[in-house]
Amino acid sequence: MSQKIEEIRYCPAGHSSKDLCSGRRNCIRFDLGICCKVALKEIKDSRYDIAEFLKMIKTIYDFDGYDFITKYYGISKNPSTQNYIIVMESFDVDLHNLLTKTFWDLGWKQKNDILFSIAAGLRILHAGNLVHCNLHSGNILNDGIDSVIDLDLCELENDLILKCDKIYGSIPYIPPEVLRGNRFTREGDIYSFGGIMYEIVTAQRPFADQAHDTYLMIDICNEWYLNLMYRCWSDDPSERPITDELVDLFQDVLVKLQINIVDNDVMRQLKIARENQKNTSKSQKHELLELFAHSSKLHPQSCYIGRYIHTLHGLNDLLEEIKSGKSSDPNVLKSNESTILNVNTYDIH
Image (cartoon, rainbow, N blue to C red; front, side, top):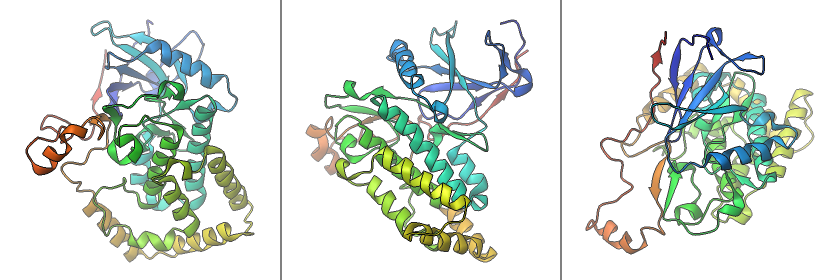
């Protein structure tokens, strides 16, 4: 590759990897004969099985409609560290950043479109017997039009059999059965999807100390949406919806929103919610933004990037000692652990 690459910058990531992006004007050219913006994701976890990753990509690309999954172009190696580097499609923002910047500009059609895309991507994974295992707003990438899923820790569900003492992820998006030591299943992905539904209507990540931060949103949300979100969060995995139901529901809503059909309770509730959002006064918006700003002062022990977490199964013998203070909690954030990833820009000549 002889072309000079400039304006390479760090991009936020939700796991133990380093993302690098090249600007559009200084893009990388491949034998494919195309010029595109890409991310170079360095996998720093030595346990990462690149052969399994390639097998997983092939499984996904055997399905039609994989536009809802991030495109992967190839692999390389960092000559200094010998870590694998995955060459993948790059996007300007993730879903969390999109919501932070454009929350009041997003109507219910756009919100449904985002959720439809995520559900469609999950359906592709689950049809291939794959489980994402780390679905959160930082792994939903957006270019201003389309939303796609970054595969991250995706694994074959058949491989997820034994109890585990340690998991990788962000606690607010991890289902209770996994925190107890069970392996991730497709029902676990649906629980994580519920966390994304919550974030879309509140612009806040789940469980970020929000006792009174969402009351104004009740008027511009609707009953069917809340009921669906709570079903995704059910403590019983068998009670959570499957991806087919999610895709069909959001697709039906999108079609009816486009042609303005109001023929059932869902659409009637949406019509009221859209009017409430439209009629929200500037003072109410300001009040809500003030509440968001207050709640953005996260608890010092909150963390929304992936990290290794000891499950309750792994801590079973120590739980009473941890509760009594006789033993330290291994899941407490260490002073040298980061809770967010900063974006830095570098010019390479």
